[in-house]
Every structure is written in C-alpha cells, then in structure tokens.
Image 1 (cartoon, one colour):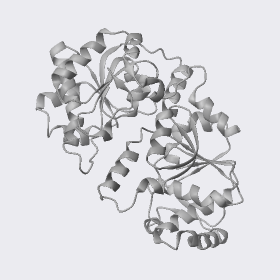
Image 2: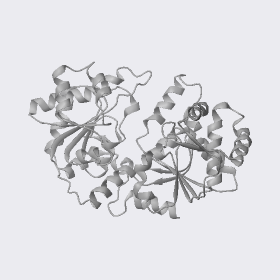
Image 3: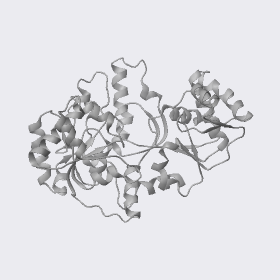
Length: 396
C-alpha cells in the first residue's frame, strides 16, 4: 500500500488526475484492482467498482468537499497518525460508493484489515470478504519475529478479518493458533485453482496426464531472520532435482513464478555450477497468468517438486502426486500434510529414494500413504467449485 505523500507527488507531477466529484454507487467493490484477473469469473455478472490502491495503478483520485470532510473526521479513529490519511481516503470512498460487499484476495493486507476494523461498529453494515490467495507462512513468520524480539508488536494481532474464505481446516487452526482475529470462517478451497479449471473447461482444453515426468517449482527464496541457510534450502530443491534428472535421463519443467528469470537466476548462480544453470534455462516454463502456464505444466506432470508454494497443495488436493522438500531445518516451512509427500532431511539419497517410490506408485496408492490428509488437505469438490461457493456467499 502507498504513502499519501507519495500520491501527492504523483499528482503534482501530473501522473495522477483529480476528479472533483464523488464516485458513483456500486453494489460491490473489488479492493485492489491488481487482482482483477483472479476475480474474472466472480465479477463478470456483478456491478462492481475496481478500487485502485497501489501507487503504480492509481490514475486518478476523487477529491470532493464531502470526501475531504470525511477524511478529517475519520482521522480521529486513527489518532491522527500521518500514515492513516490514505486509509481515511479509502474509507471515505467506500462509504460514498456504499456497496453491499467489499471483496479482496489481498489477504495479508494490514490496510484492508484497518478498513474492515473501522467499519465494525458502523450503522452501514458492509460485508467484507477476504479470499485466501496463497499459503500463509507469513502468519508463522510474524509470530517467530515477535517471540525473538525482531518485532516490538505481534503483527498477527493487527489483522482483522470479518469473513475469511480460506483453503480449508488447516487455515482455521493456523489463524486461531496465532491469534489472528477472524469473525467468520468459510472453507472454499483455492480460487486460483478454480479459475484454471474453469478456463480449461470453457476453452475445451484437454489435460495430457503425465506429459512430463517431473516439474519443479523455481520458488523465490524468502529471507527469514534467524533461519540459517534459508536461501540455499530453496536452491537445494532445484539442485537435487537436476541431479536426479541427469542420472535418470529426465527432462523436467522448471515452473517460474514470473515472466522474467533474471533475478532468480542471479541467486541460483551463487550456489549452482554453470551446467546446472544452463539445464534450468533449457527447461524453463515462464509464468503467464492469462494462459495459466504454471497450472498447465504442473497438472500435466506426474510429480510436482517444491518447498513452499501453494501449487503443491493445489495439485495434491486433486489427488495428484507431489514431493515437498523442507531443507531449511525450520518449522516455518513445515508442510501440513505428512507421509510420503514430505521430507525434511537434506540428503540426496533420501530425496532419491522417496522420489523413486513416488514415481512407481499410482495416484490411489500414493494418497493412501499420506498422513493428516483428511484434516489438512485443501478443500476441493468437483461438483461444486470454489467459484460457485464464493458466489453463494456473495448472494446470501
């Protein structure tokens, strides 16, 4: 989210226009239009207002007397903190638009939480939906940082979620354990996965099962204070996969998180020899959200390998095979499902042995080898999609 004074600078330089009027009424608001592609099947029949909240996305702002008056009035709620001016502006817009529902999948946004919290005691009862966008390891990281005194306050307690449309029971237990305030939970599964399944259905695309033997997630290594060798742990998954593929004459697919490999390759080059970097470059699948290249690749792969990505749980939720490798030595990246799908010890021999077993099993036998699957597996129902579940919640 943005600093209000940076927005003023964009206005002064002519990069943002000013509308001296109020926005019109809409029944629905999408908070943060950068996620509009994720809501394309949800929003297509709704009268909605795309609320731009990111600096690089804002093209205009509304500046009426009524909005200014509301901003000044609402600053009292935030004790006149300088960084709350923009929050009060967004609150003012929402109140004037007067929607029935505000929705967002920016589920780790403190700005969105502040706005939801502000409206809890107001007469105009707006329904706020927070749709889970990704596996939320940051809830665990926030708690770790607070307990190790890296944070002076527990950030998890700053979050306020009115209606959390989450992946499954694991998130309910996780958020309760780490004291994130959630008034209502709804287990709906993954919207992104549902979008992909709807996309291939509409476009009559046939998934070719086991087109690839292996796909591996080229995940962005996240820096975590206090976790030694965290960056290398992500790279080691790549390293072991390459070793296995070269030994067994397999051409894997490296599923990239973005449409540019430069930054991650720079990290990999610190740990991997040049021949491994070339091997990666020769087998890269770049991300293209429009064509769902990541999903197309992993669901046409016999086994998906990775460390922390949500894609692991999404593939597993459809009864397909994954291998999650947490080589960090930290419980932060612990996979919620145990058994043959998960290894922790940083050993190529263990990695090879586990992967050999997985590859010779059919999916039914593989699923039977999992532990905790009934409790923690991401919700999926082939007869009632996540899109349908969300639409039902919206209409109720």
